[in-house]
Length: 192
Image 1 (cartoon, rainbow, N blue to C red):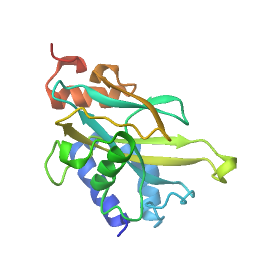
Image 2: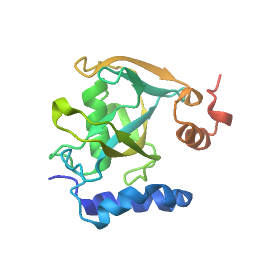
Image 3: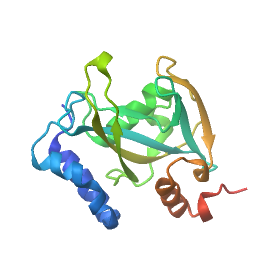
Image 4: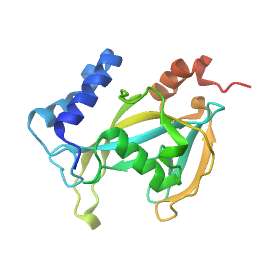
């Protein structure tokens, strides 16, 4: 079973109910949904496609970042949807397990069983002529998870390193502020 546009719409609706001030920022995603684009397909390039990410927080409220090999950048774990994904939350857990070795028995959704994404990052992906991919957009639904273990085992084909960082060190100020609010920490700083 693949993630459907109805499921993506439901996740977007939960997100906008939680963060109503974001409505103006999600116009491209709204357009792709309205036009019936196959947002679960990584081959959907008319506007772009959905991806799923994991914001993983350890017991010390540090966030897991990975060093992405191809982009040579520190990112949150995540990636493209696969045909076997049943929903966006499951896709975020699958990507987390694939890239870091942290399996679902070591993490749990911060918000329970039907969480709203903590963030929806919409970013442009440059063209990749070697793969025959034009420039397009990623609609990255990011879910907040709590980790009960630090046993990271990297998938070295895609990831070259990992680090547990304070939310204040995240390169995304909007996400850092949201994590600070959720975790009850001023300015995203880590508790001593």
